Image (cartoon, rainbow, N blue to C red; front, side, top):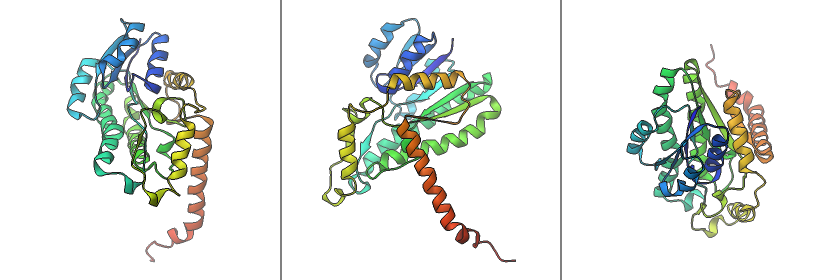
Length: 271
């Protein structure tokens, strides 16, 4: 029986993952900012669910949380929220909160579990980033910045810990039917200057809320199956939209490289 520590376990992907893990007979340390929000989950399997009050933004609370969790076989950094607003519409306090929730918190939790995983010579770190961890859209700057940062860190960590038997899995969901476009969505005050650029993204979010194509339960099954298989790939995109968007981004990068290759290679010192 493996022990999974899942942040943001009270709803969305975190809740779907916790339920799938429990259905397979494993144990869940279910973390959320409100322990009361985990009560219904705990009732499902009281002998295999440990509710854990944890706000990942409070870095001082992470070490005690890991101590209480004990041996963790799989860490899932899932806690987060969606936010829309042009950079000029987004204040420093909000930017800092986004990074604290979706970058600094996951980084600290990952660092905290690595010693015990190294000692056991095994474990899996699952980073719930987003298709926004590789792609971008006007108005998603704060969100994409945090997800891009976590992806970059996770790629490096994967190289650092592979020799210790630890695997890293970066999960990149597209639009799934969770509350990220619903009540959990944070919208900055709209400025007339960005109606033409950020406006279409705001309209997309409003139209998609409650109508996303992705099924969180199926995503959870795919993630748990990937962990069980030893995380054979570094990245796991989820949703046809994620695959299409990532392929589009890769094509854009390739086009830029082709256009700039001659300039790039001409910058070397001439003997």
